[in-house]
Image 1 (cartoon, rainbow, N blue to C red):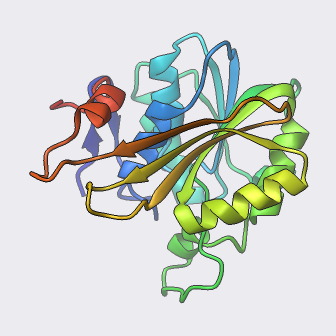
Image 2: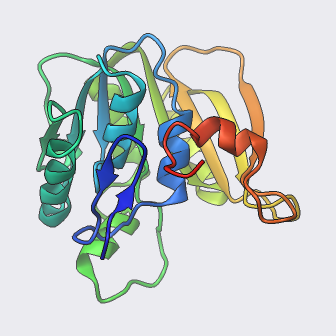
Amino acid sequence: MSGFAFKQFKVEHDQCAMKVSTDGILLGAWADLSGASSLLDIGTGTGLLALMCKQRVPDLKVSAVEVDKAAYQQAVQNCQQSPWPDISIYHQCVQQFAAETKFDCVISNPPYFNHSLKSDNAARNAARHTDGLSFAELIAAFKRLTHKQARFNLILPSEEAQLFITLAQQQGLYLSAHCQVKTTPSKVFSRSLMRFSSIKTELEQSVLCIKDENNTYTADYVGLCKAFYLKM
């Protein structure tokens, strides 16, 4: 399987259970990296989010963790062949990951299936299902590995996002930005881009539609993602 070519880097994903997706591209382009000098990508998969964040802020010190060995090896390869081989990737679960200093920012496109039927592909199950990384464990990892002013950026399907928001609030995190995403104007919202913090601020709410009635990318989506797509 051929990889996915972006303007400044290429992502091979034939060894990864979760391929390059619109979800990942949305999150990598939308995430708030302002003022951050260090970032942790939890469950990096192909390394896409780490690479997008590094393109946006070249001086950013980026670390990433990935529990699946094949995905980890592919992420290492993708980063080494990119303009930013200094991205640090660790083959371990985030529950056991430790860092010398606290991170300014965390980003994650996490597993979200709780009770759905599983396939015969163990790696794909691990990437898609919360068995190995529950929402509670993800929140706990963010709190353990960051400082008080840190930000947590993630994307989830709309229904799971509401569960996550409730859990996060119970653990002392505040939703500071929420962008609801729909594929076309006639569709219901299907994804939630979210930013959390330990500090309560006024909630920034927005809406993003990916394509218009003619199946053409909207101006909002182009404005968000044009720095990455090769033909945009």
